[in-house]
Length: 214
Image (cartoon, rainbow, N blue to C red; front, side):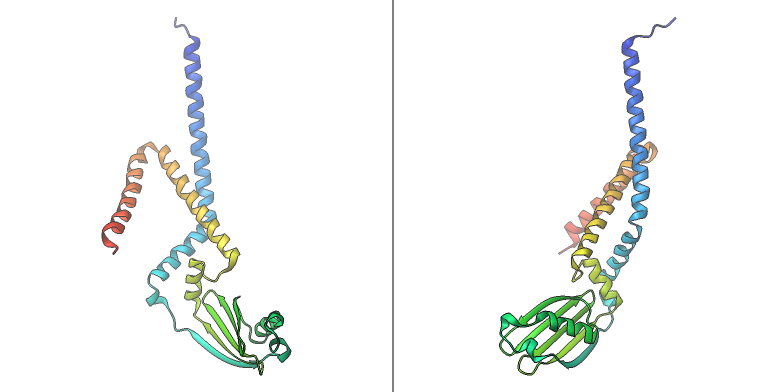
């Protein structure tokens, strides 16, 4: 008849706890990996596709459409001292009259002219206003859908909110990658080959950077 010693019971209990914790961690990692992957699927697809269009911009770029327009603003908005120029009225007039898109990026003044610039993804508009007559010339350029998507990828002229989305997508994709590494660690039959493949891919990228990039 075998006797059971307290030390053996403690050791068995500790082993069971470690096994339970290991299973919980694997289950949590799997759950996080699946749902984070689904949450970031559209974002990952967007950045993957626009990564290709950016890398081969000469193949996907289209001829920009340029439109030139003439108009006039109220003289009392512009023919005053620099400190009292009605910038808001001028900007809103340009937006409402010509359907200007993009955010206001610059409003410059000198003695004879005011220059108003708008920027957006794949879009630019510049108006030059004569301060003596109120007459202006507006040049609007639309670079097409692919150019707009490329600018969204780079976060150029996209505003603060889109910048937050880029940050959030970076965090999501980082978590997806980390949970994938944690998952492969719990799959004993694939652990070594998976980690070796990840390491090999990282080394290939480093070697390309080291030897093939001027």
